[in-house]
Length: 94
Length: 486
Image 1 (cartoon, rainbow over the protein chains, first blue to last red):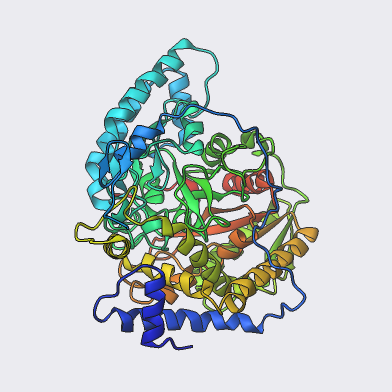
Image 2 (image 1 turned 120 degrees about the horizontal axis):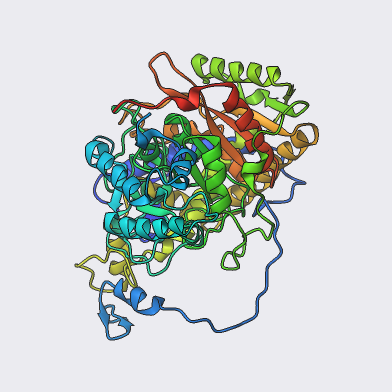
């Protein structure tokens, strides 16, 4: 399993990461090594096996839709890299 | 033994008898931190002022008399993945280096309900991704048993701080071995409970179907006390189990005669260092003497652990970490000009190399055309792994294995080879994939004086059986009484 430089670049784009010079090669090699190890899963016979998403099946719990007070609003906004009043500020989108 | 090296339950007795106040105890802990913290770098943030306030309140509870929870007035520390309202919570990452938690994790609320004192937030691998604590954006943490070596990860600071006497117990999280590995490397007891036993609300997510909260402690009794406090149903976590929490301390001291302990043959393979194998085999002999029935069992899909985990965990991580975009919290790159460059530059600058590697791996295995070959395949193999354990627990009450193939390695030894690092978790990962409770307890030392850990694995919800057997072994040995010299 060997990823091409184009594939590595595409993965980085999808992951919203920039790669610096030399990193395409470095990550490409490391990811290829890991993927080669992962290839060993092919030897496990799974044609009739159901997938497991969660090891312990818990039915979706329901609760009443009630309003509860929270003081997290100001503390949450306080973490904003940039804010304007009670809004998060970002560069112009449209 | 010096105060800071005593166990949680020993200092609880002292508080109860009023030989000591919580404020005095907390001050003693900070004195010790002042002396030796610079050698081990276990903390990212210290919360001395808050801790002394909490200690004063705890003293008031103690003064009132009557029964009080065993954690009352006890200095504890939290892995920096747990939200504690008003304190910085970094998850070991630059991207969260200025993040102040707007609310408190449920598990931490439980500790505070029991009047615990929080002395600080602990060093960890960035976003809990690592086995050595070396991926932390705040620098490595060192093993108190040998300062040239890593403490294990990802809950490295959680182990280092307790071993060094900088707190009497800590919280950790375990996604593939992140509590058990550092506990083993620092001669502590570490528990990864059944998936769902402890709420994940307010714990920064890495791989949601695998993450579980648990304690690190100096002995089994301390670990049982901490688990009792942390555990319990939480409506804010939809995967939280709605089951009563047993009084784990009550299961300690029960005889283990007649208990069947399975030894999975696939865990005693080449690659397991002879000194580790001997210590674990000696532990099996101890269990025989205690009257346990020992039975060899097979978990035929053990080999699938690392490849399955390194599909599922990065896939879940790449989704969970998509939220770090520089918009609402966390690091924002000052040179971003539009939305796309805001995401890219903030993430590129904010995340370290291991986190980026796993995000890219996860992104790849989930990307169009590869989902069935990787993610779905891994979920199916996960079923095979789970079935292995189901079959084994039909004939055994517990399983016994090593925690890791080697003892703690030297700082820098595996940082250039991610795959080699991943292989240190081969004996712990499957427990997470199957959602089982597992724990690490001290079972010896190598010739070089490095701690060795024994792993006990229980069936779902059977933490009591696991603790009962761990306590019986602890009573028959004295490994847990040793302390590192710093």
